[in-house]
Length: 504
Image (cartoon, rainbow, N blue to C red; front, side, top):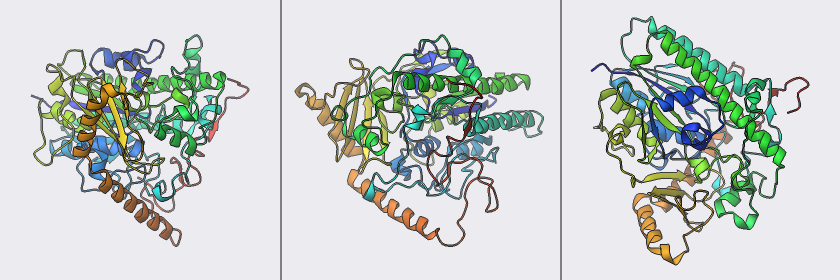
């Protein structure tokens, strides 16, 4: 059998519930709707770490972040750790990446033969947290909501436009190349990541749309779980109450960004058709994590609530009929799934044990009670936080916070914590045993703190003399064009051109 090409489209901060394939009624994304309608939709798919760089490292390796040491947005990703690009190259694929991957460290390829664009974020240790002094670094702020709406152009729009242009050109280049290997091409966008800004043509698509306000409005401090309260406090949002107008504008711009993405993706699909490659190309679509989008007053990810953790995952594979799959999945499943598409269903690594499994094996034999694991090891905590989703229940725990237990079937908005309910004590006990068997929390915490101290020392040393630049396609003389630098986490993102005489 001829190996199919694989086009992997990844976006940033797209919650599953925002797409029609997951129940949304107003999102304008016809190209994504078509891929999902003609393909396989995983109804319950999750990221394994609700933060950009760790999620991508976990996804690329088929491993949990605690296993590979991907603790936060500034942890080096070792060149010795195999990724799906390495596995696919070994299987005879040419590999390329257009867009964001957020690799940290000097290796900016990790198995990709070609990178077609610069990256978006710093590749050094500038964003390292510090559990010994948590709260010293703000990573979100209220402007994401208050400064939202229509813009003419933003750096994020510039970047994603370039991602599309270079991906299209590469598809043409491969179509006329004498290299007969199948291709694996990852096209990785930054939208709809905040700030919530979009061009007017996409804003106008939602002129008559009934975009609801959050299902769970902003809560008081005493109504939040411990981790939510820390996040909101560290970001200066704990006692903030945005107006309904601000919320509506931010949400509308978020959906406008999805529609912009959909147009970019449509251009990629048209190029596949124009070059005669569509029929022999598998298409896989997902996001690195979700987005709270105002639920509980939270405008970010970094938590295990469904909007932050649950991602869209669908794929169109030549010769496979459309279906919906109820077996829970997560991003660590992508590596073995890519290999299953490339080499046949049921693939398993003979190199290393992987956390994930080949999802093609669940097309006909579903496992509704299959567990999904996730971790949070970054800022706004001082201890590892773990999540297990099994069946209809989600369990969240850490050594410093009271546990959370939600019945997702009876309580889809996760309002009722059952962890202290006497009727659920046996279930809580079983979950705690599973956590203790899977993770050594104390050892992991010690390793994380050591890593923080080591990276902080290296950063301090870089204050003296020339500082190395690891960013792809950049050297010491280059102007820093794309990425969010050290002068302020979000300053880069708010450098946009407003629409003249436009008041959204």
